[in-house]
Image (cartoon, rainbow, N blue to C red):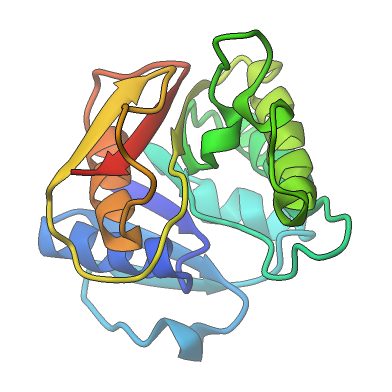
Length: 208
């Protein structure tokens, strides 16, 4: 399968690119700094660029069967719109190039809350507020896009190892879990991207 991956130098994105190549997929990684990627492979195509460059993003998604985004703001102590703006660019580029499927990594706060609204609107710690608002903006962009999208929604996501032991739930966070390794999030995100079972849903994921 032909994948274009954004956020390929981050914890989730880097693992996902590595695993996708190992499974025989063809991967285009769109990055600001190719040296940070640190991967070389015959089926890996590296494109250098910024998310603000709509033309370059469109060229990166051209010919892809699925686009994967593992983008996230590094500084969430101040109001940010990076993920929202990146999603607008991605949606525009995908429509231009006729690519329909997008799988992206979001946050558990985007999942529905039993009392109504989103989980992030109920008792979210103040230090997560800016990141949540940014991801909520991206969710709205996707919901209005008409694309075939999936949002993978982890809670706390430490680095660790790929265990393969995690639980998922559509439109909910599985009970009894508070965190999941970034490597396991990458594993499930790749499965969602290369599979055909999930469409226009948010999926909660926690470690087992």
